[in-house]
Amino acid sequence: MTLIDDLPVGWMSFAIPGAPAMSDEYATYVMYPGDRRPEVPALARDWRWLRDGPVFEESTMVVGDVEPTTELSIEALTALVPDGLPADLVSFAAEPVLRSRLGSGTSCYFDLGDRLEEVPGGRLLHLISDQQWCLHWSVFLGDDGTSAVVAGDYPAGFELDDEDREVYGDLPVVRVRCADDVTEFFWRWWNDNLVARAHWHDEPLTARQREYVAGYGRPVALED
Image 1: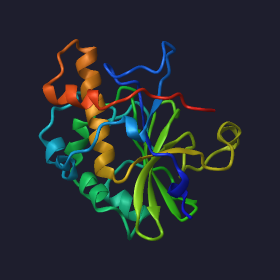
Image 2: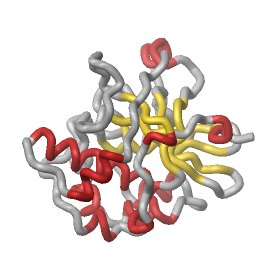
Image 3: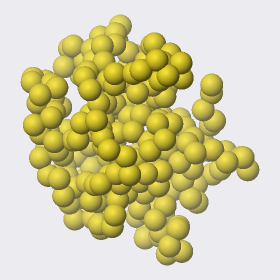
Image 4: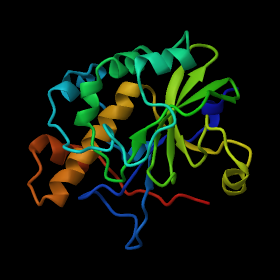
């Protein structure tokens, strides 16, 4: 039994403009259950779609408002994980320009943390933090070679001080399995933020973006 075996499948994000709303109450993040999110096309299995995408000027995914503990790089990844890194994470990190194609409506940034976090059946490699540490995304590295992207409240892989431990406790809290691989994860992230940018700039969505939004169902609230 591994960490991801019993996790619910879903997508944690801000409320997607134009998609069914949870309620009139504002929440920074909501969760779209697995059957209420857009399907991933075959196109998403290489980085061409991202490489050819528009640039997000001043994206915090390139230079964040918070200084990361460990910046994302091939050197940092291989220092943390000498063997067994997912191939798509390696290829993503090898092209820093790809990060400029990723926006973040909540000022998220890349941070590999201090170390790997041991969990049942494998380890967690921290990948992205919300600016205010409301949410964290990590790559699950299974002892059997499997991998997935998960999200939760706990800053897995960071050395926490006493004040942090009062907030987060001692055990990793992971809420949901977001994606079966890094490519799927970034495809969803990319599309969410393209839709959000169009909404904020009062620009019409493309046909593909309208189809993407139509793939969303009603989200659910995050439980305490």
